[in-house]
Each structure stands twice: as structure tokens, then as C-alpha cells.
Image (tube, rainbow, N blue to C red; front, side):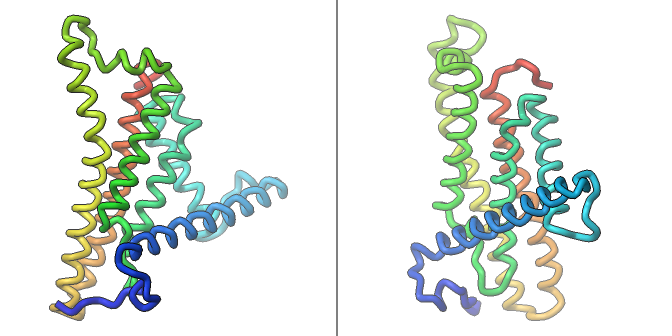
Length: 235
């Protein structure tokens, strides 16, 4: 199989930092997108047209679609208390989606095909749902829910629950890393073998997998946050 040429190689960026280069590029794209979308929204509010969407596919429309979709998903799982933390879930989804899709562009490697990046995302999710759970319930109540509903089973349940919680960042990182590495490897192989027509099919499936994996990671993070926040106001 012919080795593809990547931009980090052209720019002489050593391989350990190659995926970091692309992750930084994704972050820059997201910041630029957020700044432009915010300016468009502020301008729309100033002109009294905040409730009127832009014509066609605009940055503002994309931002509102993203926020509305993630907000609806989080509200359906967590309930009304999801509103202040929708930004956390939206950031995960947008970063992972763009990172995954970047691998479909010739010359770019997806940051999510590197376990260091996906594990860092898993750790970020881990820190987020634990922080939100402690802030919502208090440290004592948060730790108490690991003991289970029956006090005399606490000596068994507590360590098992802790193991389950600490495995989550690894499972999140491995799932995302494995799926994206396999997806883009298949795309590279069939592109190299067939050159024309057939790769288009795999580009379609690659796009589908990119969206699906971003959705799965975000949904699991929302579920973990829901579990950490207790049961009040939940569906």
C-alpha cells in the first residue's frame, strides 16, 4: 500500500507531534467558528432579527443547529439541569466530529486515530462528569452513591463502582481510537487498490462513521453526567 503524504511530514513536524498538530488545527477552526457565529448572532439581535434564520447554509445556522441538537439530546437524558452544561457536550461533539472528518481530506490525518488524543478526551470526560457530580451533590453524597442502596453491601459495591468509573475514560478512548483507526485504514486500502469510483462509497461510510462516533462519545458523556448528578428532575 502506498504511504500517503501528510502535511505534518511536509512541514517536518516529527511524528510524536503530528496528531497534536492536527488537534491544534481543529481547535483553531472551532475557535474561529465560535467567534464568527457569536458575531453573527450579536448582529442579528442588534437588528431585531434574532428569531429569523439566515438564508442558506450560514455559520450562524450551523451553530444554532449544533446547539439545538445537543441541547435537545442532553435535556432528554438529564432534564432541565442540563442547560448550564450543554456547552461541554457541544464542545466534545464538535471537536470529535471535525477531527474524524479531517481524516477524509487528503493530506490530513485524523487526531482521533491516535490513542493519546482519544484517551485525553476520555480523561476530559471523566473529569467533567466527576466535577459536575461533586458540584451538584456535594462530595459526601457523591461518594455515598457508589456504596449502593443497601448499606451492608457497601464493602462490595464501593470498590466495584470505583473500578467501573475509572475504566470509563479508557473505554471511551479505546472505542473512539479503534473505530476511527479502522475506518480510515479501510478507506486508505480501498483508495490505493481501486483509485476510482469504489473509494466514493467508502468516503460515504467514512462520513457516516465520523458522525456516529462523535455522537456516541457525546451521548455516553451525557449519560455519565446524568448518573453523577443523582436522580432529581431526571427523566
